[in-house]
Length: 418
Image (tube, rainbow, N blue to C red):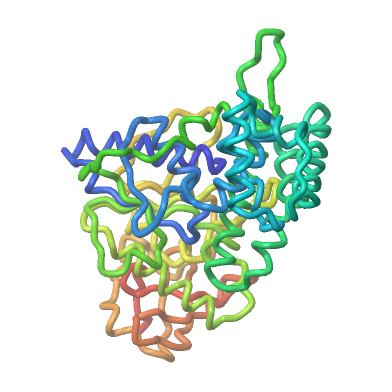
C-alpha cells in the first residue's frame, strides 16, 4: 500500500463508518507524527468531498513555505501571473523594497502590461536595479529548464536555486524543521505525480507529467480554504496536539519505522520511549473505534522508500484487533471496524508452551520483573522491567533477531508461567 492508497483507504473507511455507525464528520480524527503528512489526507478528503479542518494550524497548501515555492512554480510557467510574481520577487529577501514592487505594479496597470513585462522592458535606475536584474535572470533560468524537465525535476531545481532551501535549512528551530518537512512532503507529492503509472493519457496518448500539468491538478487545493465555518469537520492533527482530546473514531496513520518512531528517535532508546508514549497518547484518544495504518512504500526526499511497520504495532496483541488486513494495489477494500495494514512479523513463529485454547491472560498489574511469561505470538520470555506506564521490557527465548521487546501490558495479553 502506498501513502496515496493509505489516504484513500482512510477516506473510504470514514464514509463506511459514517453509514454503519451513524457518525458525523466531527466524530473522526486523523493523527500523524509530522505535520507534513497532512498533505496526502487533505488531498484525499477533498477528492471524497469530506469536510475537514487542520487542528491548531493551517491546511497544507495554505502554509507560507508551500505558497512561496508554488509561487515560483506558477511564475515560471506563466509569467503573466502577477499575484505569484509579487510573492516571489522578494522572497527570499534580495533588496527589492515594497515601494519598488508597488511601482512595478502601477506601471503594469497603467500600461496594460504584466509585471513581468515591466521587469523585462523598462530600465530601473533605483537601488533595486541590480536585484531586479538578478531576479529576471533567475526566472529565465527556471524557464529554460521547463521544456526538458518533468514536474519534480523543475520543482526541486527551483527549491534548491531560488534561495528557499538555504533560508529554510538555516533555521534550526523545531518550527524551521517543520517547514522543511512540509517542503519535502510537497516535493514528494510532485514526484508521486510524475511516477504515477495510472495517470490518464493525454490527447496524443502520452501522459503529461509537466509542471504545468501538476499545477492544474492542485489548483483546487491551492484555492483559499473554505470561507464558511463548518462545525462538522474531520479533524487532522499531529499526535503532539491530540493530548486531552477524544473522538469516537481515531485513525493513527503512517505507523512505520523511521516515521513513527521517527528516524531521529531511533538513535537513542530514551527517544524511542518518548515516541512510544506519544503512540500511547494517540491510541487512547479513541472512544469507540481505532484504526491503525501504515504504507508499505512512500516517497521520501524524492525517492521511493520501503519502511518496515512500526515496532509499536508488534506490541499490540492481535487479539485486541477486530481486523488485520493487508491491502495491495488492485485489491477490493474490505470493511473493517479497526484497520491495520500489517505485514507478517516474521517467518519463524516461536513454539508455544501452551495451547492457545488454554491461555489465561494475567492482570497487567500482576506482571513483575523477573517473571516468566508467555505471549501467544512471541512465545515464552522473561520480564526484565516494568515502568509506571505498564510498558514491560521482555526478552523472548524463541526470537533470534530482536529477542527484546517493549510490550504495552494494557494491550498485550500475557500468561504468567507458574
